[in-house]
Length: 260
Ligand SMILES: N[C@@H]1[C@@H](O)[C@H](O)[C@@H](COP(=O)(O)O)O[C@@H]1O
Image (cartoon, rainbow, N blue to C red; front, side, top):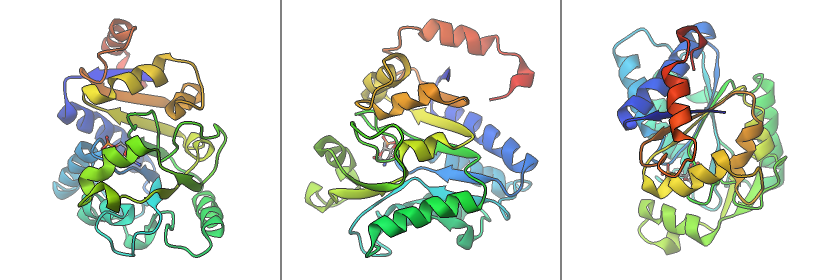
């Protein structure tokens, strides 16, 4: 796990975009794992401006969303399918048919979750998975207690997550209780994961998953077992890390050829 402490969201967006740009240049049909929430927005903004400036081509790339609410009608502006479209895929030249999300409106959710796993496998798996983290340490919608080996499935949201996400809805009553999410096992299959956390409200979760034990009570801690996990944090989100100085020293002295 590599922890990179950066001054702010602009630098975080640029560094993550560098990793995605070099992947897409190396492998034009790269498979990107796309996350919602506010944390990845600087990455999407940066990728959209690099695309507009010319030279960054997503025409052969694929995108797979992490998760989705259950029970929102198709086209609901806060369904993650719409959010991903609005915040990222509509702003670059990725083909709409190449962008997928778990189907939270399916009649048979279990079959839809299996079909999603199959679709990811069919394109060869995710090359780079973008992640945020919830205040309770969830990634995707893998709430505390999620099996560390879980696959795409239905989950029930913890009240705190519904409160955290209520800002996107008219009221907390409109936030669904159920979601479908890639499992921790699914996320762990991605070849590179890049997690972004910013702001003091994430400091505890960051400390728990980076420096605490690997445990289902803090789902993101499974990333300690990932061979290529990059954690991009601002100073506020890094403020509770015991080894912050070591992470800074390591990154400052990193050989350039290593990349992210
Ligand atoms: N399912 C999403 C997560 O993928 C995201 O990481 C989390 C944090 O969001 P934010 O980045 O807005 O804090 O929110 C939601 O619960």
